[in-house]
Length: 363
Image 1 (cartoon, rainbow, N blue to C red):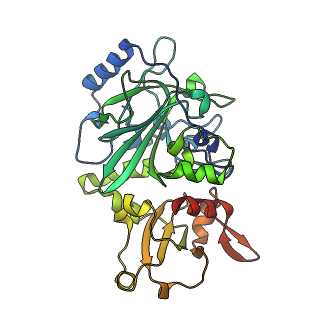
Image 2: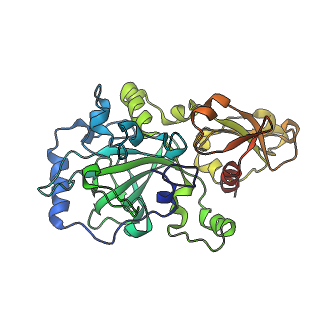
Image 3: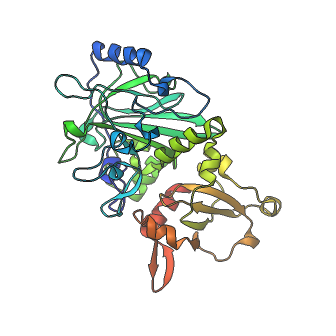
């Protein structure tokens, strides 16, 4: 449910995320702990695999279970609750998955515990739903195979009492109770209560400075945790692939195998992504010997830099700061929502959103 710009699904939500100031009652917290300890679902047991489902709903792994796992938008099928260009006829991107609740109280309110998908630390808690389409939400930081991955849990009824930024959490540990909080005009009905779950990569830890410079006078209520600074990857496909491969699953290999939308060259040699996601860098002895003048980068349709190759000056054609090298036209047609590239007079070029992304990436 990521809302970044008019071209991205659910952007309003990402541009201003928030939770409420309320904390769960002690009985709710104890209920979450009791559910964790007594639940029969194997998703709550620790494993060597990197990610666990964030709730007890396991219908994702059952044949024909999609309707029981995903919550679609009003009047739409379950597909609209999945990741990707699944809304507004493909022109709105949804950067997470919406997981249906299993448990309700006598008033019909969801009571499902929401659990950490992996070991990590609390990176951000927003308890001001009026500032976000995400309503109450939590972001956790994880280190997996040398990659810094963030998980996000939104529309929460309440955050676990005492949970604080910087606190360590274990996979399967309850962190919240599912709800339907949001600041959208139409809201989220009690019947559609769900947890919006994302797996993200952080674009740049200098985001707040970049945003202030790029959009002077505009509010940024969440600093570096503004939704524009988190690039989502598909939790559904990752969980299914991990379920299929078991302990043989590799997140790095998964990202490397993603379909690329385009290739670009950036005339920059020192930006945070290079250190945070070093396993995605492909060695180039020629550039290492002659000196690195920039990076060739493969982007997926959501703008995630899935491969980076250092290039020497002799390998670069053109003098621009950002140079579009190639476009996968089939992928662009299939997933156009981000509008990273555009075609004019029969020629492909970087669109405004693509240029903004590269400016942020290399800031």
